[in-house]
Length: 180
Image 1 (cartoon, rainbow, N blue to C red):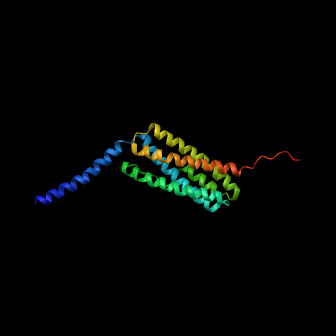
Image 2 (tube, rainbow, N blue to C red; image 1 turned 90 degrees about the vertical axis):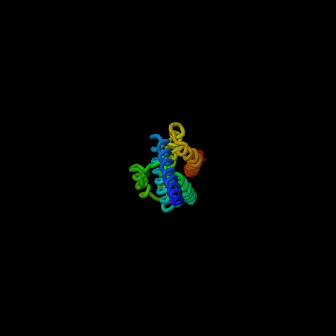
Image 3 (tube, rainbow, N blue to C red; image 1 turned 90 degrees about the horizontal axis):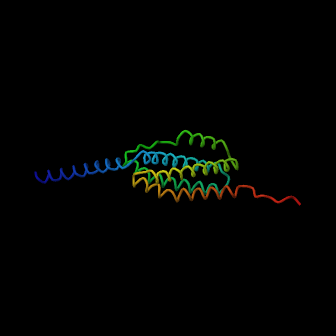
């Protein structure tokens, strides 16, 4: 009988310990942390969708390589973000925001070099916005777990922005000299 009570008490402590830990995790979050988790998740979803579109629509192997890297990296980033949001009790949306969806729809109507130019421009803008979101989290966030996500994402997003800038520079026509 005493053994059953001890086992029951031990089980209750495990369950209650998890609930207390979840409550403590939630209390460490401020509004900035919640905003970061939701916006970063939406950004990851949008990057994955638009990059899948690039795999289908682009004729450029360079663009396809960049798109595949973005899919891989943003899937990984989102895989790290989801459990933090879940432990913190932050409900994540199931799709990109309206502006992101409209941008993807617009891109889907393009093809070839027109698609490539528009996709690279959209990627440059979204990655710059993501860097601002990360910087805001690092400055104003209160949760160590969420700040750690932002710190980990920063070099990846910077690397993506560098790839986009390089691709845009190589797609621009080089200045030609005056005709002889």
